[in-house]
Length: 197
Image (cartoon, rainbow, N blue to C red; front, top):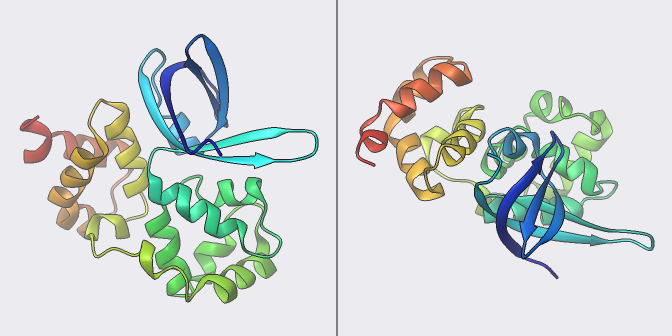
């Protein structure tokens, strides 16, 4: 099992990155929120999951280990394969999706491409009692753009820990207003946490 890898970003597409590791280009399927924040030539560490099929070996990667762990949990659901599991985490992080499952937010879950009504019901039925470890009390993570915002901050050079601190700093404003991603990113970069870097 290849559980993580680190290397320079050699190629970026919406659905995968090519990471240069010791002269080898390794293709890693990633959610769009990760590929959109990746920067060519920058070193990136990904927590990975290897899917082995008769005719292929496919790596799926995440910048946050909890997203990788949640991806594995999603694969335990009847009818959910790696592509659907990745689409579930395409825009939102594990905490946001886990919150939707724990609250049986069918509207949000049904809106995930490739899942549909029956798939959403199965997801809630099979995972409702298993998602508690992915729930946090971090107010910023209740916001639908928090995953994208964290990925953008990481893409700008902040560590995952620094990004979470910045999100915690702006959580009250982020949750009080319906901000789009560019406005929220501007707010994040003007916060105390970002300025202290």
